[in-house]
Amino acid sequence: MKGSRAAWLFLAPALLVLAVFFLLPVLGALALSFTDYDLYALADLRNLRFVALGNYWMLLHRPQFWAALGHTFYFVVAGVPLSMMASLGAALLLHSPLARCKAFFRTALFAPVVTTAVATAVVWRYLFSTKYGWANHLLGMLGIHPVDWLGDPHWAMPTIILFAVWKNFGYNMIILLAGLQAVPADLYEAARIDGASAWRQFRHITLPALGPTLLMVAILTVSGYFQLFAEPYVMTEGGPLESTTSVLYLMYEDGFQWWNLGVATAEAFVLFLVMFAVTAAMLRLSRKAAA
Image (cartoon, helix red, strand yellow):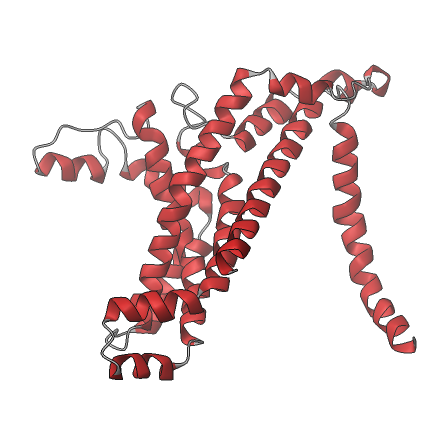
């Protein structure tokens, strides 16, 4: 009993900080989503009205919201597998006994993660510029006509996905590299003695050993990619023709351009429910696969 009281006393400051700076704002935002809080309510709270589920009902009948949700899913479905494959491939190369200068390459590949997203997005916007970007310059050397990477609705989102994969895969690479280093070397030695090929070693030793790590990396990546905002905000401003407008970007527009804060908070909680449902489905599928 005394030990339990002491533990709660030590935890109390951290719990108090979480309650003040996380729990209370979340509850306040949830309450806000049931109102028509907008620019008029900011000027005078007497203009604030309780609309119950009106904001959520409006979102369900708003084509722009469904389009933004579709763009977000497109970004997640295409970007997460590419990011995980790049992370796993880089981790396997760095873990290989033939690799040289491992510390340098770990630092170089991880550098984009700690670099400001806005700064790197601006650089990539110039790299994919129609007139003077290096991407079109290389295409011109191959005799291919320039592509309007960020101005064509068909190419804008793939370009953003490519940027996001390059920007973020280094974080997962470090986690997977730590997981690879934890796999006992004896397993690989025994497999080699039995004549197992490199592919069989990867399939029957590496992947099962990395199972929990891959699941954690997948959940973290999915959660992060659902929160797509900085890339379209800097590179395309949600265009062209709203082809890169995500739910988070739409929430920003509604909340801070049009001051419809009640609608914006409703969008935030709908996105949270979507993320929660996808994460729960991933966990359930992983348990079934392990059973």
